[in-house]
Length: 236
Image (cartoon, rainbow, N blue to C red; front, side):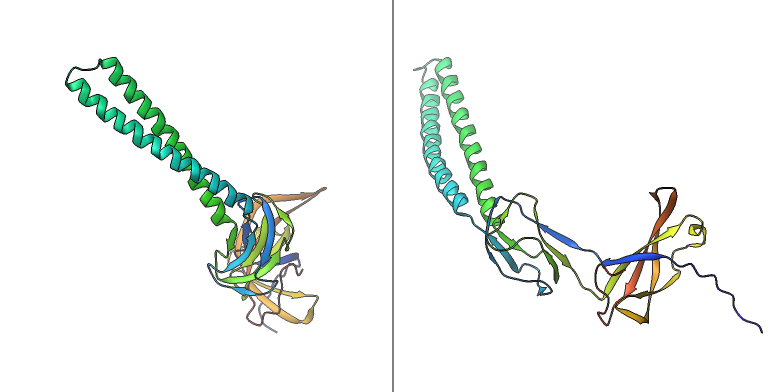
């Protein structure tokens, strides 16, 4: 009989979400509330978690007092400088006295600017105590729970835009990698649904070798459709 001859390559791989987003903590503190859970859909800007900001509030109050005090000193130094300028025009004080007033004003202004930066930074820390979702998506993982401590850059959530498209990373032996090209169809099964065939297409063939003992393989990235939401992250 006549027909097409196909060469097939059997490989293993692991499924993962497409374009995952990890939400990190920007401050140190204790989680006082969580407002979402595993598998829940979230909207961009939605409040996900709240970190205790008592220490930050006290810091803001302290710096606010310093800022107001320094602002009054700036106004006083500015008024003194203006007065010295007028006296200098009338030849009632020396140039050295005028220059000293200018130096004094610039020094106080510099201190005021530094305290203002500290205040703005404290306000930013206050805002960072409320963790909001950066995307519309679904919660895949929660790394911290209520009453647990977090630090700067600790992961809090893993979000996915959607689960209707998945990424399959497959490992191809070096003897077969020459046959692999972008756009080729991939047919695969998972243990949860052994009789069902899923399909995808190769989106990327990586040239970076993965060595395991004397074996060398290359990873390829497969984009898969998951309209029925049967596939889950981590399936092999």
